[in-house]
Amino acid sequence: LVHKQAGQLHPRVMPVHSLKDIPSDDPPMGEGGGPIDGEKLPKEFMGIYHEKQVGSLCAVHAVNNLLQGPHTNEVVFSEIAHNLDAQERAALQGTGLEMESGNVRADGFFSVQVIHLALQHGPDL
Image (cartoon, rainbow, N blue to C red; front, side, top):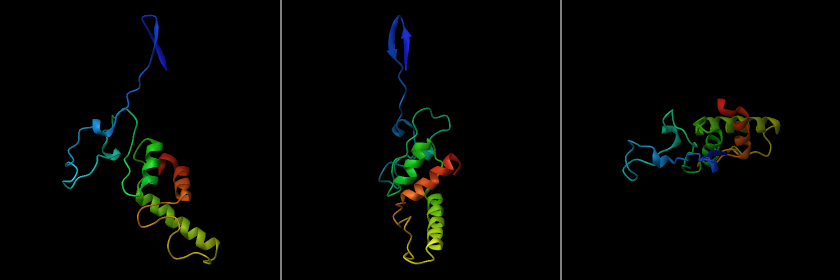
């Protein structure tokens, strides 16, 4: 985007803010607190929404970053994963599948199928 000023073309600058620009009442790192995350942004925040990755929850944070808001969380992703596991067991009549989930791990890693289903729901997760 460009705009004219005094007969010259100038690039229009879009402000890009980081979460460090947002004041926080969170305790500093190492004092029981953690990094500021996107869920604590004020409603009037103007800029690019970004959640920092916590643990292995990169899929959850990536979807929220893509949708530009706190639209989902690890609980919703876990529900999708367990429903998908049940559908897979039913389709295979229980053969070839362990009792452990193939779509979510204990550390918060989710399969690409879970991400795909979450994105099909869009911002109305």
